[in-house]
Length: 181
Image (cartoon, rainbow, N blue to C red):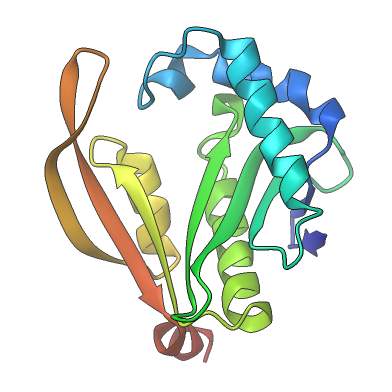
């Protein structure tokens, strides 16, 4: 699987992407909005194994792709779409970037590409995403790609010795088509 944008290539995740993923997972800037993981190496390897195993599923329902900058095959993040309910044509998206690449518009570009894939190739009706409310950068990305905040769950997750609010954002296929003109 490969999706190309103006500046990025989203491709199937590979085992040789794991060391780079371990870099950003170990970065305190990235970890700020995630629960503490006892064994970071094991957690990343297990997640990567899940990304790779999903590539062989029939029918495939999960696409968590490596994000690379054109001309450099080194992974800078991941972005994916997961079909939650094929009958309702509903999926969710998620993305993560190495903090060294924040602020360049890459998350917005990757999320736009994965939404396009979800609506135009997978024929989804509704695609949603969840983010921690304090993660204003992620919320901004979701708004830039045309998603609307549908829910605000107060004190919805507990990690790092505190309660966190979360937001649910979503976009319908009709909204997507209207935005694309």
